[in-house]
Length: 131
Image (cartoon, rainbow, N blue to C red):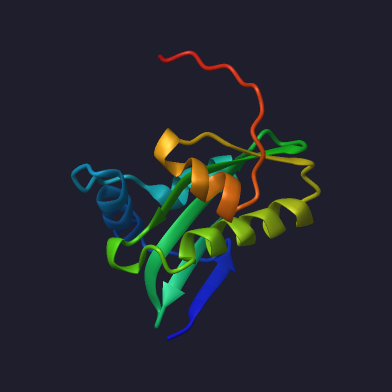
């Protein structure tokens, strides 16, 4: 079975809500992802296996040269098969095509190997204020 990665492809809110809930361990919410990405994102990538959404990543941006990887998620039974790295790779291509110069990501420590080793991000000093 082949995984397809599509930049700025249509999706159903229910599918992203279910995927997000599973991946981030919360109840299924009723978020209008389509409206959110239309208003705030440079793009997004959908990963599909046989037409079914199995992965998603949102690429927000500042309207200029900085893009930000958010909400990278792969369905539980599809993890550790390279789909997450494929999502990020497609996000890199999309941000590069939009002439962004930087792609940022924040991650929890347990995802360090994924983002640094599998996806090629480099560490940088950064700051954060919890709100």
